[in-house]
Length: 114
Image (cartoon, rainbow, N blue to C red):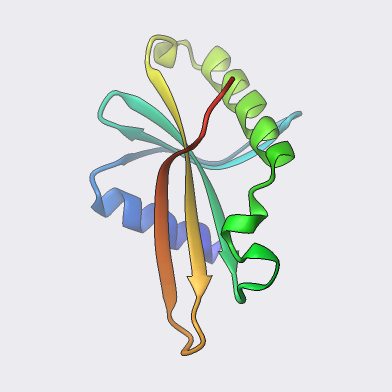
């Protein structure tokens, strides 16, 4: 949770508005749902301590993307006030460096619903 909190705080400082954290349904979970002006952003937060196995970026598999998309569709269907808004799927990657600091990499449109 602490890494999701770091991501949330960073994104709020960038002007996004938090709609919901840790939204869960039968398809999966979305870490952060945020509003970026008129766009609903579904944000997957990934943290890794090492670059082994692709680091934080390597942790967002196609299967995980598919579950996030299905979960987002259910969220929008359950929250009709958002029905006409554009959707965006972002990744917020936190990679720990050898000196113990964290690098943030916010990737807008990290993947798309097909």
